[in-house]
Image (cartoon, rainbow over the protein chains, first blue to last red):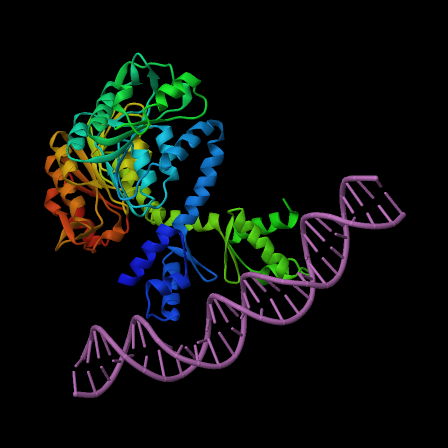
Length: 250
Length: 250
DNA sequence: ACCGCCAATGTTATAAATTAACATTAAAAG
DNA sequence: CTTTTAATGTTAATTTATAACATTGGCGGT
């Protein structure tokens, strides 16, 4: 494919929309007619729709649609959406991020903008969600697939993690108590989480308030091990204080 | 919502697109300005995008997008089904089977009965399909996720394969010619296939007849390397003979 | 019922964008 | 080295969108 066409395509997928005027600034010295024809090609290729004065990315449009859809279907679990939305603010472009398995993180994956990211995840459903983002590189750790929470674990998954670096890890927890820290219900899964947390530059835990005060068999982290806990507004005030006190630690 | 707006919305979602001129025929006596404003409302509501001279349904556009992903799975569905059905007969209970990525194999995964199986696969979508089977143990090889065919590959995926045994491998091929053998379009993917075939006790290739005579850049197997080729009835007769001659070889 | 208000729609002039047709240039093929 | 083809540029004509203002009709308040 044409070099210029690729650049336009990338630009349009990142911004969601482009104006002919912007294109002319991007490619000075080219006639508007040529750029117009390029947009037509993108439209024919099913990448974009031409609008008055420019074009819009189809991927971006369907992302908006999905967002609306997801928003509605998540109304009963509005907390997850709130948490994911907050977490989105800590997603940094061009970073290596780890996405844990779990519905809250899945929600985050659905909200991801078309930014450039290197994503590693332990959840095949999250990987398939993220692959819709044209600018993301997706890595999936290998291993045995847990039927209950759709997460991968096992010795090979641990080996996989040895070979990658993680800037930011977005982790899920099934329970938290001051006595036992962050806990989950599966040993192998806990091992994965431990390793990810050990390797990550920054650890953010996404946990809705219903998990507070509950303990599951396997502890994968203490409060000190994580940099931030993102939750909804349902936390008891003293919990809120202790969990969010260590924001921006490290 | 406005009665007229609903009708426009319905119309646009059915046809996928509407021209202002059509709208004026549908609602004679209304000024173009009003209809234009209606389209703008639909755009603000996230239902459509305005294009030159009309508007397009966002639902329809994202359907097109999904079609791009699913296009291949919709192509030759009848053939794929026939092939998958045949392949199902070679699935043996309590065996370690490998399922390659690809739409034909996906079709096979959907047909799987609730038999006890140890499944290893390179496709996250196939893993998620198989996990519905309560008696199956699912392993997913790790690695980088290819956006085009949703398959995993990379060095870690190869390492993963070192540690497992495979009784029967159900493989997909993007092309076959007598000169080049079985071929695929991606180097890393080809390496995975090679390793699987080397390790598997029995190799069955699922390939619809449209792939016959086509070559892609990377050869992953010769006719001698596989035990059986399952195809539909669309093969030229001499192809049929040479491909199926080695049934039950080994 | 009367008044005034507001929202929806219509009208017009102006600005902007698209198209079509043809001219030019550059690149590939022979 | 010429021929051919594809890509790009140029211009004018057409179509479409916008903005600003005018009109209509319903609705609530007193």
